[in-house]
Length: 329
Ligand code: SAM
Ligand code: DTB
Ligand code: SF4
Image 1 (cartoon, rainbow, N blue to C red):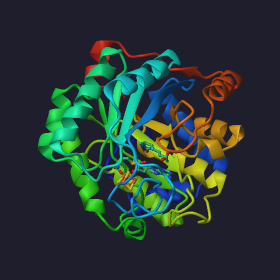
Image 2 (spheres, rainbow, N blue to C red):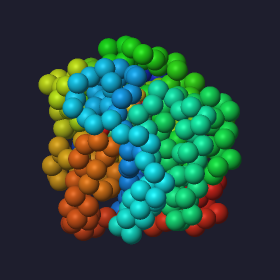
Image 3 (tube, rainbow, N blue to C red):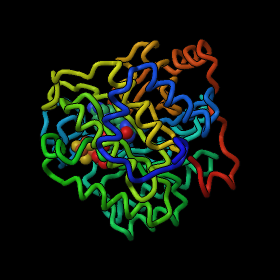
């Protein structure tokens, strides 16, 4: 089978074999795959906004927003529509093409979902792609979001099924898969990835990528986050991941999911420009852009533009409407 084929039957041995390649060989293979599917000098940019911050009932060990951790974060109510629209406009004027709205919920109530739908409609009216991450969804809620014109739903597997219970106890890995299935069946583009640097081992990282790559359809967007360590969370102070090991994960994600956008996500503020450049060589072709992630800092937009200039990278322009509706990416 050719290396460019989109497969869903990766074995753990094959994936561990990729990780075991000499660094140069792995990056060369990832670049070859990348160039068959994408313009290697173009990066998609998305901007995040937390539309409901803090007081989340879940106990995710990495998260600043869990009510179970004392992180000093101020609880906020659902943002008013005009504030969301102002933030989306600013992101669009800065060159961002997708606006991702996050809420610190285990799952949305139907009433809250309707309020988020107003936000989705308003952001679409600005000509931007929309993404939301609201926690677990029922099949009906996913359908409702699709009817409202939502382009992407973000829901991360976070880590391997084996390591999952060390990080989160208030929901299961299977719950995550179920929501992803509802999103896929509703016809919404899937954004699903995970976090590296939470104390997991190399096998967990290979297993997480295997779970993503062996979904019936690959997520259109695969965010690879490096843990942002937040004081007061259980994972604060954990041994981080070796930067070159992180780059290898990007390369393996690129090879396993050749046609997906692989997003270099949280943690860029703690990465050198050189590490980020290696991630782009390894096949990352999307970033979160703008000074803020959800509750933590991201690099200054001006710094990112300068880095892109130094690397000859262009920001992907907004897709034409008809492309956006069907197959985005
Ligand atoms: N509450 C919803 C949920 O968990 O699905 C949506 C928001 S949640 C903050 C979205 C994702 O952000 C998490 O699944 C996790 O992968 C990522 N994330 C959260 N905190 C992070 C951190 N400190 N470092 C890296 N990634 C983080
Ligand atoms: C994703 O994979 N990363 C984003 C987005 N999806 C929602 C969130 C990163 C959050 C980083 C920590 C914070 O700012 O609270
Ligand atoms: Fe809540 Fe999401 Fe944070 Fe978990 S990751 S505590 S579900 S906001």
